[in-house]
Image (cartoon, rainbow, N blue to C red):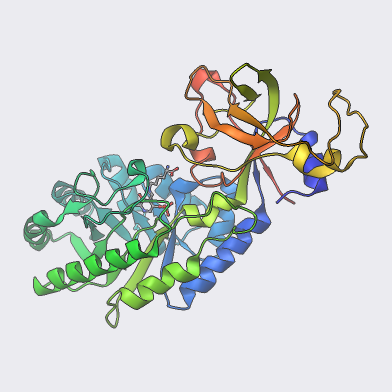
Length: 405
Ligand code: LLP
C-alpha cells in the first residue's frame, strides 16, 4: 500500500484525505469474482459501503450487480453503468418517491421489509401499469455474533419481516396482482468472520424456502445478504477477505434447487482494505497521565471508532516507513525532529481528532514510535463505511480523496 514514492506524494498533499490503492481494490474484486463464479453465485456490491465514483466505476467493470438502500443509490448505480437487471433495493423505510424512481428504472428486485410495504409497492406499480419484482426480507432471528450496533437479524431489530407474520405475507402476495414474487432475502449483520454463523443462516434459509414452497410460492432467488468481515488487525498480511471459505459454506449448506439463483450483497469485504485515512499530527501533548497525538482528521472523516468502538490499525508513516525512517542516523529533519531509523521503544498515545467532542478518539494507548508535529499518520482499513459516513460537523471541509496511479 505504501512505498517511498507514495509517501513522498503524501508529503506534498494537504491532509486529511482518503488514499485509495486501486491495485488492492482490483485484487480484492478479482478474488471475490473468482470465488463466487465457481458456484455460479450472483454478487451485488452494497453501494452504501463506499460510493466514491472511482471505486464504484471499477466495481461496475467486474460485472457485479448493485445493492441499494435509497433512491439516490439506485440512481447512482444506474449512472455508473450497473445493469438495471442486477439492481436490488432494500431498506425499511423506502419513500413513495424512491419506490417510484426504482419502478421507473425497472430494477430487478425490491427487497421488501414489511407487509404494509408490499401493499404500497403494489399500488404504486399498478398506477404505472407495471409489475414489480419483489423478494421478502425475512428476519431469521440468527445471531451474527458481531457488534450489537451492526446486528440486523434478531427479533429485536427493525429489519425484515418476522416469521410469525408470514401468513399475512402469503395472503397479501395472493392479493397483489402487480407484484411478482421472486424469492426470499436475508441480511443478519456486518463484519462477520465466524463461518458457523453463515452455516446457521443456511439452515434458516432452507426452512424458510420450505415454508414458501409448501404455501404454493415457487422460489427463484435466494438472497443471503452480505456481512463478510475483514481483518482490521493485519491489513498488510491478511488483506483479502476470505471469500473462498464464505462462498464454500453456502455451496455446502444451502439447499439450491434447479433453476434457483443464489445472490449475495457484499460491501465491506469488497472495499475495506483498499483505503487508508491519511492525516498529519498537528500537536503532541505530553501530559502527566496521557500522551495525546492530536491529528488533523477526526470523527468527521472516520466515524467507525467513535460509533462502534471499531478497531483500525494506526501507523506513523513518517517514522515507520518511507524516506525519513531510512535517512542516516543522527540527521535532523526540517522540522527539528530527529531521524529514527532504529526507533526507540514505542510510546503510548491516545490518538485523537480536533473535533469538540470527548468521543473524538481513534484509539487510546496506541503504541507508536515517538511522534512529532507534521508526521503522517495512516488509519488503515478505512475503505468501507469511511468516506461515506463523513460529515460536516464543526463546519469541517469535505474530506478529499487521492488515488494510487
Ligand atoms: N445488505 C443489506 C441489506 C445491508 O443492510 C448491508 C449493510 C449489506 C448488505 C452489506 O453488508 P456488508 O457486506 O458491508 O457487511 N456502518 C457499519 C456497517 C453497517 C452495515 C449496514 N448494512 C460499519 O461501519 O461497521
